[in-house]
Every structure is written in C-alpha cells, then in structure tokens.
Image 1 (tube, rainbow, N blue to C red):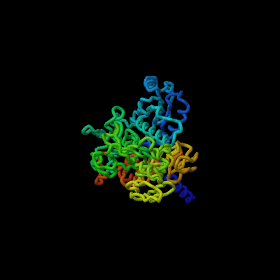
Image 2 (image 1 turned 120 degrees about the vertical axis):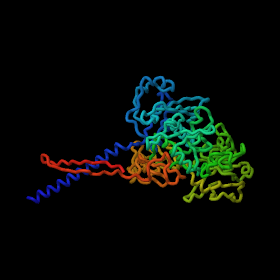
Image 3 (image 1 turned 180 degrees about the horizontal axis):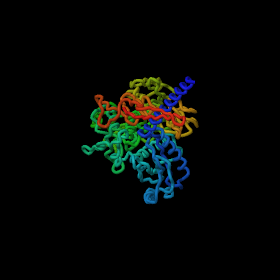
Amino acid sequence: MKYLYRTIFLLLIIINGSSADRIKARNKRVQEETNQTTWEPIRIQYQFAQENYEIEYQVFFQNLLSVASTFFTRYFLVQRLTEQITFDTLDTEYFEKRNISTSLISKQFDADLLIFFVIFSDSQSYKANSGYFKTDPETKRPTVGYIQWNTFYTNLTNITNSDFEQHAQRLIAVTMYDMGFIFQTFPTYYDSSTKESYSEVIITEDGISYLSTPRLRNKMKLHFNCSSIKGAQLENEGGNGIQLSHLERAVFYNEILTSSIMEGKVVISDFTFSLFQDSGFYNFMEYYPDKVQWGKNKECDFLTKQCKGEFEEFCQVENEQGCSYLNTGQAKCQSDKYSNECKYFQIQLGYDCKDKSSAGGDQNQETFQYFGSDSMCVKGSISKNQSAANSQQSSCYQYSCDSNNQLKLLIDEKQYDCSSSQPQKLDKGYFGSLICPNNPEEFCKSQNDCEDQCSQNGYCLNQMCICKLGYSGKSCSENCQNYRFQNECFELCPKNSYAIASIKYCVGCPGNCYICESYNKCKSCHQGYKLNAIGFCDIIDPFSDGGEDENETGSGEQEDEQYFDLYFNYQYENGYIIGATIIYLILL
C-alpha cells in the first residue's frame, strides 16, 4: 500500500508541476499581449459618395477600387480601430460641401480607413485630388477621407491594360495622400516603436524644405551613397496642393509621391515604404519594392547640383529626340512647370512603348516597331526602306532578358544580342542603325514591369502582380478561388507563410525580416537592418560606425522574455491539490 501512496504522491507532484507550467505559459502569453501592440492588415473601404453615378462608371470603378484595396491590404499594417466608424449631424455641412450623400451619415463602417469616392466631370479641373477629415484620436492616423475623381480624363472606350494601369497608379497615389502624406500631417509623425515624436520633421534651408525622418533618410544615404543627407527634398513649385505635398521630381523622378508621372509605370520604392513607416501610422508585411536607378550611387553632388551637374539622368538640349530615361518610350528633351528648370526626356503622345495602342508615327510598320509591356525604346531604327530607317531617331522594339540578365531584341523575327552597348551589325537588305542602351545588364536588373500590366485584374510591384480576389498568375489572368502565393494558386498556404484571409494571400516574414514568428512579428532582421521594440526591422545608417543614431531603437536580435519561478507550493484541500505559484516577469 505504501508503494501505492508513493506513486500517487509522485503523480500529484507531476500534475501540479504541469499545472504550474500551464500557468507560467498563460501568464507569459497575457503579458506579451499586454505589452505588444498588435499590427494587422489595413482594411480600406472605398464608398461611392452618391448612388446615382452612371452604371458603366460604377462597374469600372468597382474593379479599380478592388485592385487598389487588395494592394494596400497585402502590404500595409495598422493598429486597427476598436470601434466602427460613425458620423453624426455635425458632419452634415462637410458632407454637403464635398458632395457626399448625407444619407451615409447614419451608416456605420467596419474599416480602418474609409474613403468616400466622388465622381465628377470638368474639362478645366484636375484629374483627381484627395484629403482626409477624421483621425484616430490615439494614433492621429487618418481614418476618413475622400477622393474626387474627374471622369473627363477617364475614357472607358476600348480601355487598354496600359490605360488601366495608369488609372490604378493614380488611385493608389491619391489614396496615399489620404493615408497621411500631406504637409500639414508631417509634424504629427512619430516613431511607432518608441512612441516618441521626431525632434525636427521639416527642415527648411535656402527656401528648400526637406522631410527629415530616420528610415527615409537612411534609405537615401544608401541609395545615393551620400552621408550628409538632410532629408527628402519636397516639391517647391506648383502652388497650393502641389508645393510641399509631393517629393521633388529632380531627386525622386518617377516615384509615386512626386507631382506627376514621368514615364510608364510609376515606382513604389523603398523610399515610399520607409516614409510611411516613419509616419508611425504603418508597418509592413513582406514586400519587395520597385527598383530605382535614378541617381543611384551618384553621391551628394547629384542631390545638390541635380541638372546643373553632368548627370545622364537629365538632358540639356531643348527638343532633342531620344529615349526616356527608363527606355519606356520615344521622347523629347523638355521642361515643364514642375521641373525646377531641369529638362527630362519626356515621352511624346502616341510613342509610349509599353502601350499597345500607341501609334508610333508614320513609319511604324516599315520600321518593324512593337508596342506592349515587353517593349523598350532604343536609339536608331531598322527598315528595308532606307528613307524610313534614316527618318527615325529612336524606335520601340520587343525585348527579353535571360536568367543572366543578358538583353536581347526581337525585330522582324530576328534576334539581336544587346548584351553590350555596341552598334548592331544589320543583315543584308536592312538599312539604319541600332544602338543598344548603356549598361544593358543594369537595364535588365532594374526592370519592374509585369506581364500584360496585370490584365486589369491587379497592380504590379517589382515584377509581381498583386491580383484582386479570384485571380492569380504572372499577369492576373488565371482564375483562382483559393489562396495566392508568388503568382501561384494554393488550397492552403505553403509552409513558412501566413494566411491573410480577407484577401486570400499568403505572405512571409515582415519587410526586411530574416526569421519571424508571423507576418507581423520579426525575431531577426536581414543584414543592414536591426530589430526594433515592436518586432519590425529598421534600416541602419549605412555610414554609421556601428552605433545607433538619435532616432534608432532596438538591437540586431530580440531576446525572448524569460520567466523565473520564485516560489512553488502545493497542499491538500478537500482531496485536491492547489498549486500556489508566484511568477515574476523578468525582462532582459
């Protein structure tokens, strides 16, 4: 019998020890939930401001808005609102002023950002504008805004993939202004990992203003190879609504937050992602930003001299013909009201190589030109007609890049090796000349475009289509009712990826993260980044000596929180064991 008692006694110790472990695990979980801010995929709801818009516009914009909302939910994380968005009678005057139906005042919206979409048509007005008018009282993040879209510039007749892509990038851009990229909002920016405001967000020197936040500044240092960057130069021309509310084009060229689209598809690079992370309103899931060549490694002179220096990014001779900087179209050297006295090779109407509907001039067919998402501009032309070949200074031709980033051109069913910038030797019977671009390997490495511009079912970021629900594939042309991961369709998310159920996407670790617990919790960052206090990765100053600058927090890797059992006791009471465990949390 004594052996039975001894066995029971040992079992009770084991049971109680197991109970203590469960208590310890539960307390650890509760403490983590208490101390850790939760970041979840943003829920953006676009709401038509009126019910009586024309049906054809409603159908078109429903598709466009679906593409944009999927894009934002795929990448942007926010601290979600704890209550639904509501309005009251005090909002009536504002609704009427913005032409938003007052019947919407009585509705509730389960979203993190509600955007009223207003449609109008005016040949003398802007293409689109936006703004916000309500914020989260705790984080100051914008929660309610509007977009006014001018349908005079939205021709729905025979809309091409290129047309749709331009509309999508315009919508994404104006949505980003609703999300907080507005000059008046800059002073509210803060570091979400420390909850501290930045000491000086706007720096103004010699009449030029700079947005100076740590991650954006460090990204610029790395890209331009310049250690003395004040911040991101803001647009200083264009008047109210443009000036100080866009990035300077001479510095950022085709970035989505500049004042206008320069050529082809706009760029959403690490500059934009870093800027929004610096706002304190957003963090990011796994992302691979568009690549940027403009000003890369041109050092500090590029930022200070811009077009007054000898940089290939700019041109000097007015109306000189050539290819645009990114080789996306046939262009002329021109300036405009936002160019800050600089001249750029600007694509001429009807000569956008990426647009299948481009005309390409009178000699289009005779010079074997090709227009589409896999077309590029090169100097010279080829024709069996000598007069046609000599009359055209640049042309659009089909291209491909192989796995070794070797550039090939396909002209009249013949392939030309453009792996060097040397002039091409033409076959007998052909006239003209063909000069491949400088640094063809870099050209291949820097491509961001997607096949067929995502077929009006998605938006392209760094050669990856982010497709709306129901589609997948390299061009968003394949039906998929399940989860999407890297252009493929899966019934369940693959191993080491995490499901975002609302948009049926599978994602990896947070941006710039090497090892993680989930899509919103990193444990170790890629080289050049460090882990901050809330589990996301911050870029390290590339010119630092290993120390942290004044705005940086965290360390290279976050240690697990550890618990220490200070006291453990057990006693009998009415035949049951009660474990009295006191657990102290030690944060290392």
